[in-house]
Image 1 (cartoon, rainbow, N blue to C red):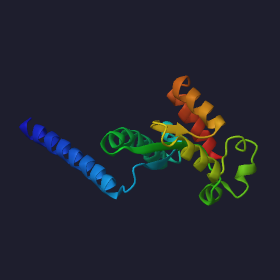
Image 2: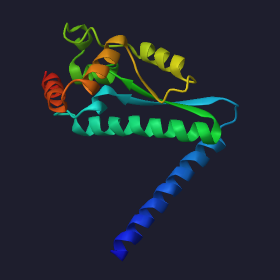
Image 3: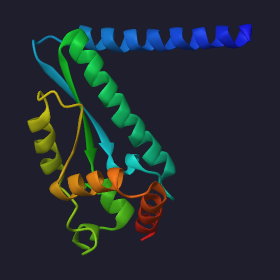
Image 4: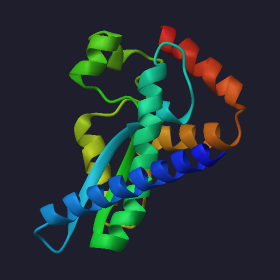
Length: 165
């Protein structure tokens, strides 16, 4: 039990040290009175999905990391941090994964955004003391409904079937 307590204390000290390093490295790099950081995430980080488990897990981390930094850095160095929880974005990587004409598919077209649309929404939200945002009207509604009203298993099943296409 004593060894377990020592391990927990070491873990807490490591976390504190990492937080201090993050804050000090960011605060030392700030030269203006206002600055911001946007951390890209994905709506896939809201629930698990077959075929993209690692990606979804890293996006969940990105969202929580952005929210935590937003609180910490605004208090410490008055830096705005925003987590951008985006849906599908028509990028070269998206096209490689889904096919060049994926953005024109009728089952996806209504929710795909361009990179400039996502960037514009994020830049508009930066500085408004929000920890994270969803981009695109459709994705905002989908994320709201799935996070509050749809059972997790149903959401995971749906996303897994969607990812198989």
